[in-house]
Image (cartoon, rainbow, N blue to C red; front, side, top):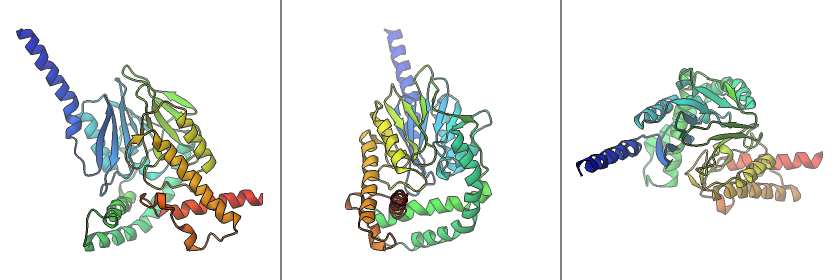
Length: 341
C-alpha cells in the first residue's frame, strides 16, 4: 500500500511539473496557449510587442519555433518560457515568410540553431531588411510620437475599439523606432523546396512550401497526427491581411490545399487560434475582395474615389482595417492589368 501511495504522489508531482509551468508563464506581450502536449501558440496581446503569433512544437527530441516575433526582447521571453516549461532544446526556427514581424527575433538564437525558410524568403530578407530598417529609422519615430500622444491624452472607455487601436499600433512603432539600434539581421540557413519532415519520437512535423501566396514565398507547419496547422500570414483571424505583396489566385490555391489536409486547429499569423473554418473565412475574404474589385472595373469606376474603399459590413469589425484600401487597390489593379493584356 505504501508503494502505491508513493507511486501515486510521484505521478501527481510529474503532472504538476509538466503542466504547471505553462500556466504560470506570464507576459505582457503574448499569451501562451497550450494546444497539446509540447505544442503551444504564443498569441500577440494588445499593447504588447510580439506583433505576430509564434508556434512552439517539441517533437520529443528537439523544439521548433515557428516564426520569431518582431521584437528580439520578446523572443528572449519566448526562449525563457521554453526553458521554464522544460521542453527539449530549441534546434530549429522557421521563418514562414519575409515580413519583419515574423523574422526579427532570429538574432536571439544561438549559432547551432538552424533557421529554416524557402530560398526565395531568404533572398527577400537579405534584400528587403536593410531597406526596411532604413525606412523605419527615418519614419517610425514620428508615428510613435503620434500614437504616444493619443495614448497619453486618451479619456474614455479603455475597452473601446478606439483605445485598442492605439494599443495595437503604439508598441509596433515603438519597436520599429528601435530597429536601427538593436536588429542584426540573421538569415535563414536551411531551406525547404517542397516538404521537410522534422519528426521526433513524440510527433511528426511537416514544413510545406507551395510557392507564392501572401508573399512571393510562404511556408506552413503541419502536425498530421495532432491535426494542427500553423499558417503564418496565409491566414488572419478577424484581421485584414496585407494582400499587396502576394498573388490572390495563388493564395486561394494555398487555402484549397490547406482544406485538403486533416486539420482541427489553426494558428493564424495574426488573431486568435481557431478551428479549420478559419481557412474558409480567409478564402471568403479574398473572393469578396476580388468581387468588389470586379464590380469597380466592370462599371469603369475610378479607384481614386475614396468612397470606393468602404469596407463591407461583414469585415467592419476586423482589425488592421487600414489595409483594406491597399488590398482593394491591389485587386483592382491586378484585374485591370489582366484586362489590358
